[in-house]
Length: 210
Image 1 (cartoon, helix red, strand yellow):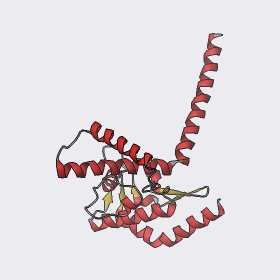
Image 2 (cartoon, one colour; image 1 turned 30 degrees about the vertical axis):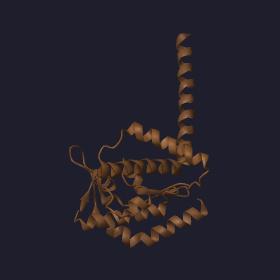
Image 3 (cartoon, one colour; image 1 turned 60 degrees about the vertical axis):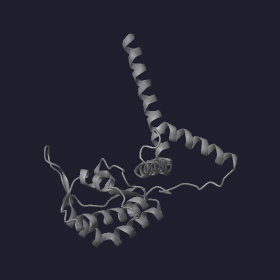
Image 4 (cartoon, one colour; image 1 turned 45 degrees about the vertical axis):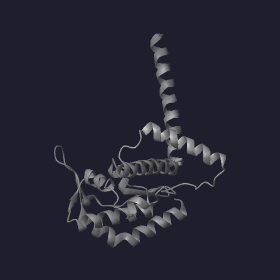
């Protein structure tokens, strides 16, 4: 009898876990643009404080800065100051934007004469500090300092179809301790040759919603 009760509890717990996890996953997916905007805002806040500390030294603690920010937000609220809606990114990065990012990234690696890059190299590229007064596609799409953990990122969903933006021969998988890597020049060449075809396929799938 105890076994049956335990089994029932396990089933109910699994269902509760499934329901909660799927609901949270849908919430995150539907509000991905909000999450991206928040992450962008946090990075901008850190950049502002870092720039101030470079100019003026350790002028205040993080707690003092946060306290003063809250006070000024209250003042803006009292004044009913106009509110600028959102920062970068303004919307979730779409399939065409991802294609643009990959082309820019691979061209940058080619300029650096890198023929093989791992996910670690790609994340290092995403994490490169922005040059003074300059902005590139990583900033435009809010990707600066983001992390890619799986190769699934290098595919896009158009309608119900997942379209890979690289071919199998462009990614060399290796067993540990060797590092798996992408072949830069071959991947870039294929993307440039098929950019128009991929763009049309993505657009067609999105229009049909299939």
